[in-house]
Amino acid sequence: MLRLNFWKPAILGLSIALGLFIQSRAAQAAEIVVAGGCFWCVEADFEKVRGVSEVVSGYTGGSVKDPTYKQVTRGGTGHYEAVQIRYDPAQISLAQLYTLFFRSIDPTDAGGQFCDRGDSYRTAIFVADSAQRAAAEQAKARAEAALGQKIVTPILPAAVFYMAEAYHQDYYKGTNRVVTRFGVIRQDDAYHRYRVGCGRDARVRALWGADAPFVGG
Image 1 (tube, one colour):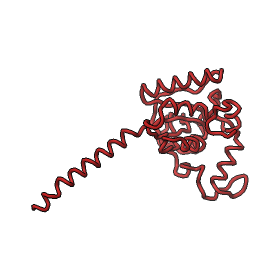
Image 2 (spheres, rainbow, N blue to C red; image 1 turned 180 degrees about the vertical axis):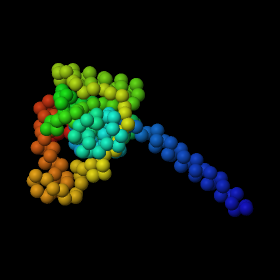
Image 3 (cartoon, rainbow, N blue to C red; image 1 turned 120 degrees about the vertical axis):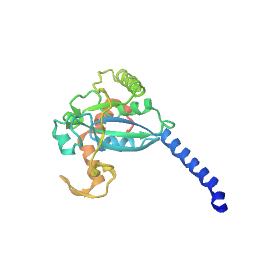
Image 4 (spheres, helix red, strand yellow; image 1 turned 120 degrees about the horizontal axis):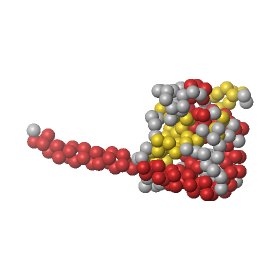
């Protein structure tokens, strides 16, 4: 009994310390949801950003519960291809994230993005609270002023976010062999060829020039 009583304070102290650590990590975590066309590309871009811990591909904004990729891209669900970006506010702010987002897309295109056409490929920002809405509205106004063109990307209330199928997650760095019009090639190679062929970087570079954060010179 004496031995047990001796260890109780140590165990209690460890439990308290662990609890505080978990609470601290939870307090640091935050997330935003944006739709920028092909979610493979948005995921690949934002996973490079310092302060971003994870980017998850999925669907949101529609009326169909637990939609599949085929349902969403076929149309009629109301869902957008979107990503959930998890980040540390101590390292990067909402304003910075939304600024990067606008400069990684074509926010003047209401019919889709680049070669991907249709409602599921439209751009949008989904906001969960007043702070996100204010930051998104400010970033949109700055982007519109920088471009000198009307921005059509809407700022919408957050909706249920459905995680996309497993094979879509981190597609851009996958090593599986996939069948494409280029033959059977590695997944990461297929992604690169798709992105170039779709004209994403070319259009973003033409639109934003040196302010485009994810494309080369």
